[in-house]
Length: 168
Image 1 (cartoon, rainbow, N blue to C red):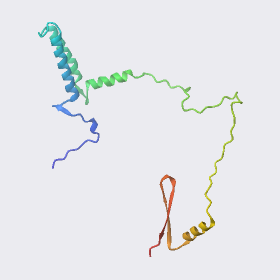
Image 2: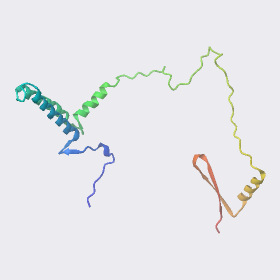
Image 3: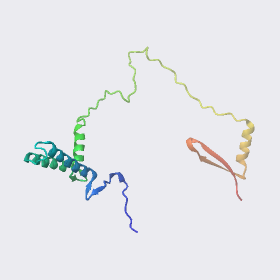
Image 4: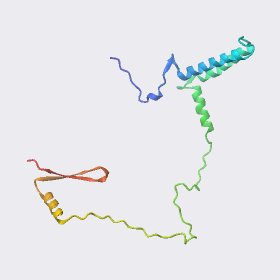
């Protein structure tokens, strides 16, 4: 049985449509063909091949065909688009320490009337009160030698307590 290796990053694999040409390369060639046809039909003398028309058709085919050449796994048109995006980025980054983003607001020392010191409220944890009868029952279960107590951590910081009978 024949096996093939499937690449992990399937999105980077380009499909070869005709021979070693990808869709983008074939698209550029078709654009050059259509543009050459438009030049042949529109420019005077119409529907006749002249030296000016031939020079324009060859020139545009060399330029657009040159964009379809593959260099280091990318076509020249993609390299030019990458270079164009790079050249349009800002060339200098100015870091300013005067930016107020992410800073704490420090009150001005001269204005004492604006500063009102609020006392911090301490939060106290209140545990539920358990009746004495319930405490006696739990103490009796924990000291029973025929039961085993197990503790497990639950989700969100809880603890699950289980009592299981001891197997002889």
